[in-house]
Length: 237
Ligand SMILES: Nc1ncnc2c1ncn2[C@@H]1O[C@H](COP(=O)(O)OP(=O)(O)OP(=O)(O)O)[C@@H](O)[C@H]1O
Image 1 (spheres, protein in one colour):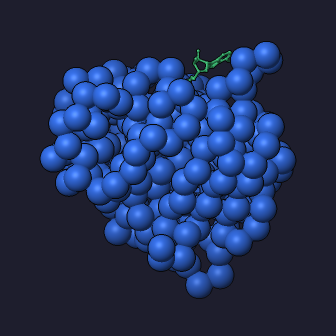
Image 2 (image 1 turned 30 degrees about the vertical axis):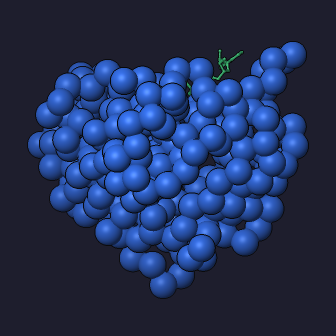
């Protein structure tokens, strides 16, 4: 396994009395895109929230860039270099696109070129056209793009992306896929929760399939595409 930036072992989490994750095991290598797949309710969002500290892990280990981060507060994890883009867009609706980007600005680690709005506007050309528009006047897909761009302004080493393609128009889904590939080119590792195999195949090197809070299958996207039994057993087809 090539130098994992993120290594999760035996991760358990839940809500109140409900146990949802039963020992999730996964790793993400530097500069790799991996798709966390599985049906509704399998535990994809919960896994990302538990890694990010938004839901305190009840057990297990989360190592990020060589440090144990399980139990850390989310802001501290974000500052350490792990970005998180939730399913529900989190933009400041009263601020413009450019202002939203400034809110996310944090210094880059030594030796890494910092993201600037100009570089981000190359990755997200549709945002460039609306840089002075208030976020309230953007579509859901555009707001989702802006949330990703703002996360990149924090110069993360790795990003957790929760269901980026869900409910978006096909043309925006394509832009989203391009943005994820561009992040990979820039050396950012991405763990993307995704139900859509086409989107996963477009962006990811590898897939992990969750069912009932544990990883049941993992392998290359090509292996997943070739294995109808696995897709039928664990994915919505
Ligand atoms: N805030 C919450 N309180 C209680 N139970 C929750 C909460 N959020 C999620 N769950 C439960 O945890 C389980 C896993 O949900 P999770 O959202 O992680 O699944 P998912 O794989 O991301 O699916 P989806 O695509 O539906 O988001 C489900 O049974 C869900 O009902």
